[in-house]
Length: 194
Image (cartoon, rainbow, N blue to C red; front, top):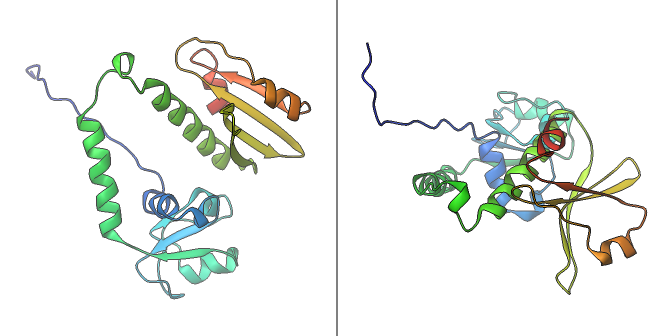
C-alpha cells in the first residue's frame, strides 16, 4: 500500500518546441514552415517541425532533403541548444511560481493565450488554412484574435470567467461583413475542439 505524499508532478508536452522557439525569436519565421536540424545540409534530420510544416507533410525524423522536396520554401534552422535551454528555464520558473488562476492578476492574459494557442493548434491539426491576426487601433480598441480564410474574416474576443463582451464599435464599422464571436469559459471548448 502506498502512503499519501505531497509530491505533485506536471508533465508538459511542448509540441514542436525547438521550431516554436525559433519562430518566437525570429518574427520573419512566424506562420512559415520551419524545421530545426543539427545541420542544414540535405542529409540532416528534422528534429523539430513547426505546425505549418507538419500540415504540409513534414514529420519529425524526416531527412532535410526529403522535407525540402515536399516544401520548396521550407526554412531549415540549425539547432541552438542554448536557446532551447534558456526558454526551458523560463518555463520552469513560471511553473515553479504557480498560483491558482483565480487569484493571479494576469489570469485574463493567461486564459487568452491558452485559448488562442489551442485554437492555432486545432487549425493546424484539422488543416484549416487560415491566417491568424491580432487587431488593435491607435485609440486602443482591440480584438484578441482574428482569422482570415475561405474569403471571410472572423474576429474573436476571449475573456476569463463568464463575462460577456461586444465587438468594438470601430470593428463593427470598418468590418461590417466580418463575423464576431465572444469566447469565454462557457463556449471555449467549441472554439478549440470543434
